[in-house]
Image (cartoon, rainbow, N blue to C red; front, side):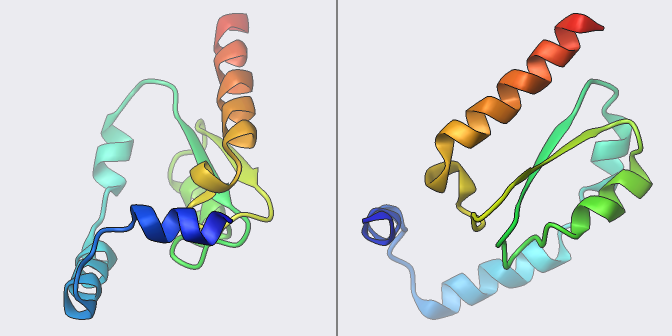
Length: 101
């Protein structure tokens, strides 16, 4: 099923390399880049994401109150693979909102 698909597509790295990569991600701070960008933004969160919890949407909205935030429920960090139709629907709705403005 889905787990086999995810595992097949995963890079074959050592456990140390994966942990080092997570440490780098933990230090990554993209807030200034997000604040600098003046175009429309849609940020999708996954309800079961262990890396970027959906609760982070509140912090994002406090930082950037004009962005759109969506939630892909019952999905993990790999929500694009788990629910591609839900992701496409969220992007489609966002783009239609832009057309209406």
